[in-house]
Image (cartoon, rainbow, N blue to C red; front, side):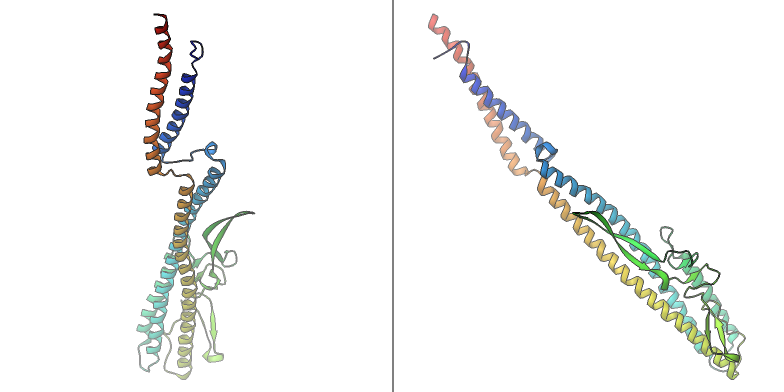
Amino acid sequence: MTSLLTNSAAMVALSTLNSINMQLNESNNRVSTGLKIREAQDSAAYWAIATTTQSDNDAMASVKDALAIGRSTLDVTYAGLDAVRENLQTIKELIVSARQPGVDRVNVQTQIAGLQADMTNKANASVMNEQNFLAIADSATENTTKAVVAGFTRSATGVSISTIDLDISAVYLTDGNATPTGILDQDRTYGAATTALTSTALTVDISALTDSADDLTILEHSITLIDTALIEVTTAQNNVGVNLARAETQETFVNALMDANERAVGALIDANMEEESTKLRALQTQQQLAVESLSIANASAQNVLALFR
């Protein structure tokens, strides 16, 4: 039955066209933004996971920056220790050469004094981001645990920050305390009575020593003092090197983890552009057919007029 008041065919065609238009708009949005999930209403669960993961990845970016700064600080510390170790090795060689009778120990001491001043300068210059692990202000108040931010972790109980900790109690070279405890400026005592030596690696002085038996013993104590400081600097360099290697490895891991998180977020919310392109083309065709169908349905009412001619 044909009715002038109710055009069922047009109603069906219009409903179909509206449905196609909604799908077409959705597909257009995905193609234009590259996202299949842009907000919570698209998929609450996936949107929440993707948003949290992206937020954590942003935090990991800050961890990456902190790691870079921390690694640079450790690198500067390592370089400072390496330079001081070379100076101590040279001082040790000079004092050993001064053990030979007849050597002008005043001239040798002039070279040693230059190296001692150079070690102090290198310790003071080992600064990165206003952090100096080799020349501390006061061992009594200094926090000897230096932490480098290494990771950001989310668990069921919340979030946590992991660190790479360096204990500088056996690393620093000079100390601003009234009784210094640094590797270079702490008092070391060797021997007793007339052959006793109490000095630091920065103040050891052989210029007044003669070829007497007592003075030669003191000279040998000076060699022991410098060698002890050299061993401690080597140990400190090893400790810093281990932490530096950890920081470099962690930096590589953080980069890989950030890439993995980005891929995970993409898998959740990114649109498949090949699929969306094909779907868009099909919907455009369906839209044209729906418009044509609606046009035919609307035209059917006009055909009723032919019955009255």
